Length: 190
Image (cartoon, rainbow, N blue to C red; front, side):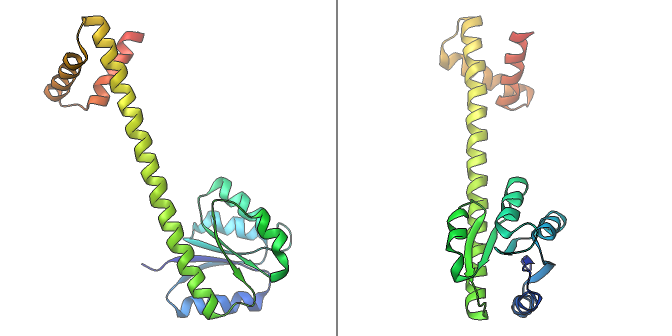
């Protein structure tokens, strides 16, 4: 499936060149913005795989637009910068900024930067997913431990006995241990 890219650049000639280079290399350009406001609007409308964002743009600049996008959407951004904009780059240490592309933009520097940015974004997405799964597992374990503690107190059971009872009850009722744990905890609070 083609990777979908949004281009935010106020110079229309650069925007057109970048679009052609991307499309010639198998990417789909889902939108073009000439200012930060439009970039934000298009980011929400299209939710692209990557945004190429020029730092210096009218109205809202690229860094401000990137911050808005980062706070609302988890979309990776590849900043486009001129050599003289080092002070902007220092400010651009946001998680969703996955790289920088220095003007003038050529196919030789655009394509590797886009590939690396997309790869980093995929890696970050997978890691965030792994962290979320791990957090969910910890929360489920906490529920089971709490319910086990309740059974141990209420029925004067050892820890292994309480766990064995929960496991056999969940199996006989064909519900997960977490669901049973929630029932046990809710029963105590009602």
